Length: 217
Image (cartoon, rainbow, N blue to C red; front, side, top):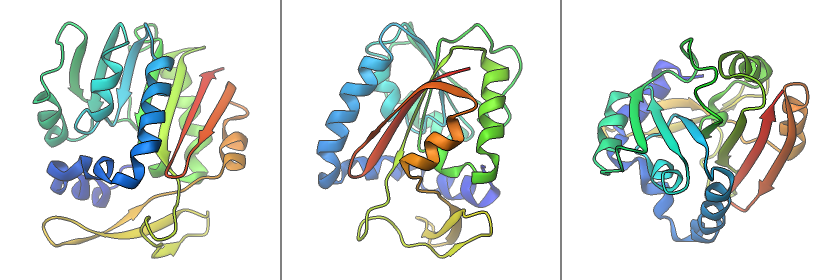
């Protein structure tokens, strides 16, 4: 979940949020992901959670009927709006992905989140899926993109709690150190968590990322 430490870290690092996508070793994965994401969202009305600086919004906007891109941090939304995306397709707004408002059901046919699922506590994942279903409705397409742990590339873990959640110590641009929860989940763990709340679960696993798509029951 979005803790104060996590929110502060991303707020301070907003200007450099997209640096991870500039790592050359990730380019092959990103090329494949862009094709898959574009195919999944063709013609959809998309709600994007935790959009950051709109790296993926830019791609989705090329194929979707509409995209409402949201983030908890105004700093991220301000940067996202500088991309100059088509206002007839894309709208932006501040929204807490873990405290969704009422009135969303029927407005969207798909939900997308990149980098969000790693910040959901393992013990809260099934509950969060049920919340998405109650807020957005049955049969909505859910697509999650997140990172795979890679030795020598991913940050090492500082600790693991009793529930199996893993934490990293990250240094932000202001020089401060932040403890951030980030879970790297296996395919079997993902399938187990999604079994009761979703159908048509598909997972594409790459070296640095995975892409999960499903339909909310």
